[in-house]
Each structure stands twice: as C-alpha cells, then as structure tokens.
Image (tube, rainbow, N blue to C red; front, side):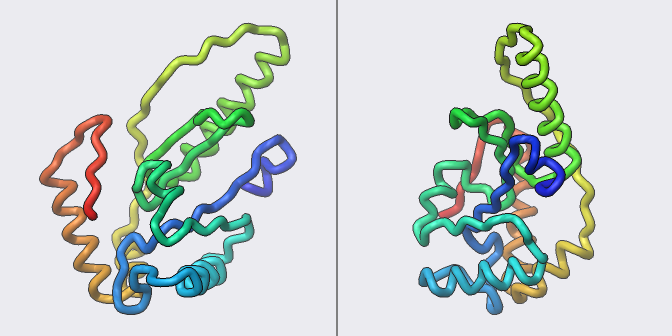
Length: 167
C-alpha cells in the first residue's frame, strides 16, 4: 500500500513505540540503544520497507496518539487527523485512503465539502496461531501478559470512547 499510494500524496511511516508484550527475549526498553536494536530486529524480521520513526523512552508520541500498541492514523497535510483506528487493518486503511482521495477529487471539481465525524466497528482477520507465534518469539512472559490483557478486555466489554491504561 505504501508503494501504491506514495505517488498519490500519501507518505506511510511506522512509529515504533514500545514492546506491546515485553518478555524475556524482547524486554521493556531501558535504553535508546536497546530500543534501536529492537527496531532493527523488527524491521528485518518483517521486511519493513517504509521509514520507521522511533519514539523516545518515555513514550512522548505514544501518549499523544492514544497509548494503544497497534494504532493507525491518517493525518492530513495541515495536521488534522482524517482517520484513526485502534488496530492496523490493511483493508480498512485502504478504504480510508480511497475515501480521502475521492474527497480530494470532489473538492478539486469545485464541490464544497463539510467535514463530519463518523465511527465504524471494524473487523480484522485474526489468527490465534500467528499471535501465539509472535508472543512466543518475545518469551513466555509475553504470552501471560497477552492472556491477562484479553481477560481484562473481555471483562470490560465495549465502552465507546474509553481507553484503559495500565501503568
């Protein structure tokens, strides 16, 4: 997607924030050097081609953008958030990019557009085996951390607009 839309005014960046489920093999970052090493491992392991920005150790950018580990934002040229999702789901992101392109085309045609707020309940493909594989790569503590997080999520139920933060 990054390659396909790069010549259409979109720049795709990856923000490396923190270990979502730190464990023995990939512990919570204690130094910038360690975080940069984890970033390089991530880039190599998943063959990431787009630029990766690395948040500072206190998570300044992460705090500004919602504190979830796998969020996606589309930010307009003027800095306005045009799309936000609490999970990175390529089909949903592509839908949003095309919607933005269509809106820009209508504006160029002279149509006046008025912004409005919308929400969507998205669904993503989920492979428990792939999740487990990634967690095991991090270490056994990551598996237990993920199980606890899923249990908390189940107990909470859906609450629009509410973000729980464990610190």
